[in-house]
Image (cartoon, rainbow, N blue to C red; front, side, top):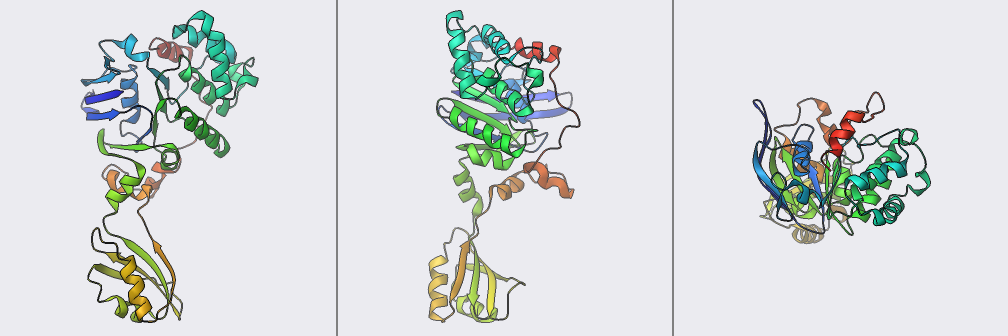
Length: 346
């Protein structure tokens, strides 16, 4: 569907995208994940033809984005981080304008506009000026314009930025619906957003692809050793003694919060060893009742930090990479110049 080969983008001495290569197959939702400044938006802008690459190629359904842009872009619907909206138009006027730019046949426009408005749940807003819409509804209008023309691929750059929790959930539901009939590429730095909706995750750092797999496989590949959180009736010394004969245990760590009659420990296995059954039988034989045994898997957050730690800031706020973005001081509005620039690439 989409093939990115050796993609590079330089701004003077700064390399925003560094020899990036990947494939996007039909019928899946892809998460394009990375910290701020990793090159996500630059890559999305190159794929959509909004920005020229310094080196490398992007083909969509076999069509080169730079050499055959009009044909390549027929397959793409794009929602930039800042939706390209004309705020003095009504919702329907704007969608009719976009449909014309996308060369949707005139006899099909009304039906398509009605369908995308229903899909994005903005039918009741069709006669309202865009400037009077909330941030959440503006984002829905942006999604509607991306869907117009029914492209095979929908590319969404930070689609939930600036939204409240309720609006985020609503947009996620819309993305899942889009994934039923389209290939979706979702660019974000918010881990919870990506893990909630994506079938496949690509992690980018310093403009390079550092991981590409399903969320489940990424967790398996990055886990290595198994970690068990144990809560056992008895002393920590007795538990350690009972487990000392298990050769596949690498180490045992005590939890300082343990009570007098209950031991809390973390048991770490050697790489790729599943020790749960051995631990169970060893403690049962020693007559040490297991109150709780939990397999502590690496979270997607842990994997993200591990893969991007060389580019993450050293300050404590580094964890905000996947929790939230700074709220804009003023409401974001696309200028007429920006909207016209975007429209020229449709």
